[in-house]
Image (cartoon, rainbow, N blue to C red; front, side):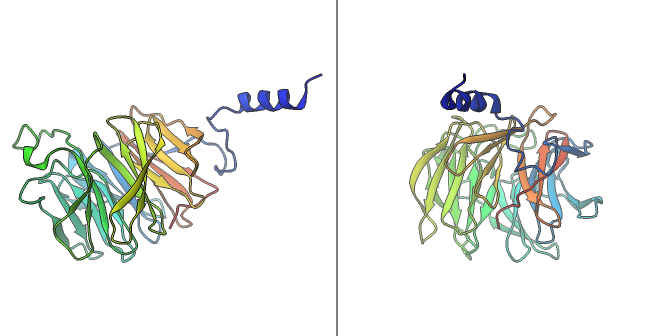
Amino acid sequence: MIKYFQLAIILISLKGFTQSNPSLFAGSAEPQLISKQFAFTEGPAADKKGNLYFTDQPNDKIWKYDTDGKLSVFLDKTGRSNGMYFDNKGNLFTAADEHNEVWCISPKGKIKVLVKNFQGHRLNGPNDLWVSRKGGLYFTDPYYPRNYWDRKTADAGLGGEKVYYLPKGKSDPVVIDDSIKKPNGLVGTPDGKTLYVSDIGSSKVYKYDINPDGTLGNRKLFANVQTDGMTIDEKGNLYFAGNGVSIYNSNGEKIDQIKVPARWTANVCFGGKNNNILFITASESVFMLPMNVKGAR
């Protein structure tokens, strides 16, 4: 006779990760292809209506996939935008690494360059960003050489690859973590109290407390996982792009894995009319996956 604790161990071992959390998924955990006509997709972000925006960085375009399923070019000549994020007023912030800048695109399409450099030194190449409800902007600045740059090395004056914070209304960012090997994706909680940052160079994700002045404190290792972009749902689960999409609960425990038919999954976000569609940018493609949870707002 199998004792209770033996049965529990068997059930746990059978559970695994892939599609093991049916409560998260509205049906099969198999992503649905939207399109595969791109060079390399990145920076998914959804506006308040749930329309998806994403970048095709090599082709220097921002695309829009609306809630009716229509795919169109939103903006051409985007400064080679990479990561993106919408604030509460409908402004689209982008990490525009053609000239190593951070942009803000208004709802009317007006472009404003928010960050041009750091203390006179050209940034490595802003990669991903997140905007708090208070308007403070956080962004990562790893060095990934681009074939459209006129330089071959990073600016030594920067002193490395760092995480920055731009207070609302300011033009000069401040360094908030200079100890990460290669910072990449990041996302904060809606209450503005916690920030997660990927160190893709050491395959780790760190968790920080956000101080009242916008700086970071109390850094802790959250998970040992190599991830590019990330997002968070209403239950506090984290979705890490990279090798498919890895899902971790708020305690840093892996609870599921989404298989994505692509060589690399760059980023993820929630969107759709009910904010319950997980959008995935993956190499030449964009996918969608209906969920039983909504994105955090």
